[in-house]
Image (cartoon, rainbow, N blue to C red):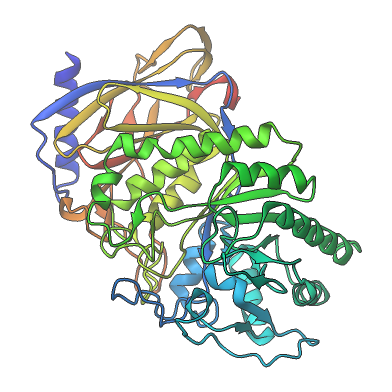
Length: 536
């Protein structure tokens, strides 16, 4: 039987097995090959690579006439919502970064804080459009209980503008006044609360957003934060990370900062909003354009090179990434189509040795992993959860030969000694039928035998059909890229009546079959029997 006949049968069986699946017109079919280079990992990520943010924005935060934050702030979130709790628990653990624009206006209501603890009030004449706000310790205690109950790992963004004055040229000058921050850190330790990392400031590096701090001063302040952490945690509490600067990448600024911060820093964080403003009418065109997606690799590569060429021991993180800034765009950044951008970012970040990737946001705005009003998961939540369950720590260099509309990434599998391949089809009419090829010595394992093959090998690799792989095909409901319902193998992913996250079940496919990637679809392929040196 020819490969084309076989692939058509596979596609027929796919449609027959999942009759509720809307099939995009696919009169065109192309063959392709996924090349996986498995001799060594090209990048390694943290065990808790997936991260999401919680922000400070009050309900009055509006962009382009739309107010998308509701009660999604650190200060007013419903921490008792069952879906919310279950959604975090599923990641076991989810890393949560608390921060955002208003963090540099927050004071902490510690016992020695003399200022009144007042909420943010909108005032467009002020920096960031709001008055100073406050985190009551009663609210922090509730948050700490919530994070403990859900198993979250917390990264807390500190106010880095305290003590500085804003000049007419937009620069914030003067040393960081860490009095209130140190008091808050001491409160955390004295009450046996857990914060896994302290991040200094938000978007104050480079040109800054609203204002900026010089790299030399920021390095001095980061060293001050490290000294505080060392002092406060010296009596045996788990030592948290020190993180910064939490802003947009500027090569010269980051180079000076990392060199002058010496070894005070554990992770250096940058933000990504590479799709432009949420009001942009061409967001989907950008997301589906491989050349546009490729552009962000330049910045990933640049930061990696700066780290490698500096004296720092810090690793790279993406500390906040919403794609489209100013709260995203409804029915785009909270819809199926955004998973093409999001998963491509996770794959690209991994290849460039980025240890953690924090999505803006967990909830809030139009780019939340969860719906802002009812907490139900948006499509990107499920994309992140499947990534978490299937993609291990080691990223393998992967390329695709065929259409330019396929995005491909491979990791050592989390659940086995095999590999997991991620394939995304950005084309709306072409079905791609792909084989996977390895270019190194690898071991094949199945029930009866174990043998080594030292050559460039093409899968399928087992002629007797005994081994199977697991496939997770993700598509939009009714084929609508704007849909907020994601289908897994043809079935809608929805929480049940008591707020449980649905099971994520694969289909099992004979390992001798090629992989079929339907138009506008995403496929995770777990190959447990493909063992490469990097994953052994």
